[in-house]
Amino acid sequence: MMITRRTVIKGLAGAVPLLRGVRALAIEETGPQIQPGPFKGTRESLQAYHVPDWFRDAKFGIWAHAEP
Image 1 (cartoon, one colour):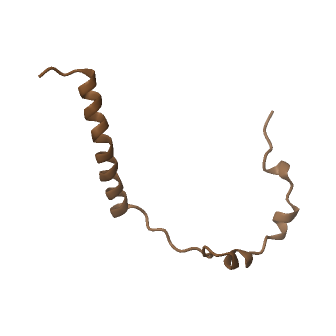
Image 2 (cartoon, helix red, strand yellow; image 1 turned 90 degrees about the vertical axis):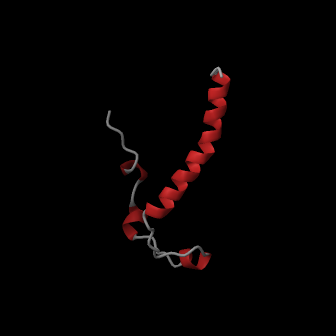
């Protein structure tokens, strides 16, 4: 059997989904566990948030300042 570019590309294209599946399984088993945060996925939860006073007084320039 002669190996051509076409057969190599076909083989690699078939291997990509397989490798992604194996990687996804490995991440699920050993990946970091995310702890629940202070907010839930509801509007009521987000409406309970209070913006700090220092944030209201902050100026945009201190965030986007670039050195010349």
